[in-house]
Image (cartoon, rainbow, N blue to C red; front, side, top):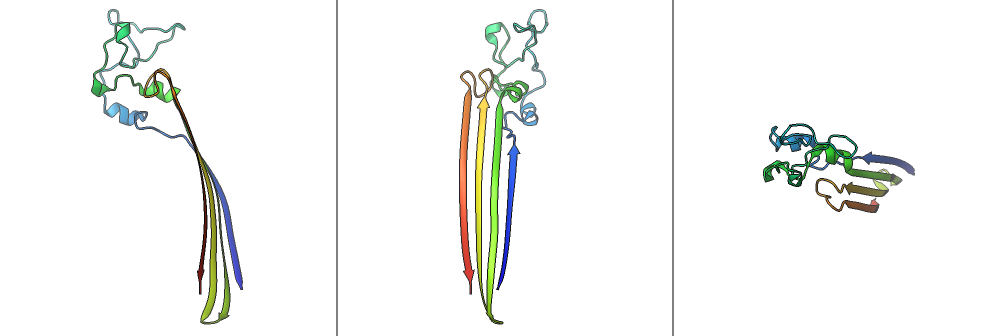
Length: 157
């Protein structure tokens, strides 16, 4: 009789990247003529927020006298600001075990059984901000927990 067992556990934490927040994809689809920061259309000076800091040009600030970007240039989006404000987290825990046993009755007759178990849980959480992008103006949180339990038995004679 022979018996062997293997057990392993992994843990993965990863930050997910959305296509619109991928700076390489985003900049390939928009011309280089659009500014990063909002400017005063008369003087060319940067517009400042209440803290005296420059703020990003989202491409849809016509209420402030700044021309909107056309539809193909992603108005209401700003890859830098969205990357800073949005959150996306993917966690995965895995426990996996494999075992088999064999009984040899004669040189030409062997009984083998295989057993395996896999337990996986995924936790996906994300938040899209209230200022710019798909989450604006209300924000968009999401949590998605998934548990997966797999159990296999196979026998050969």
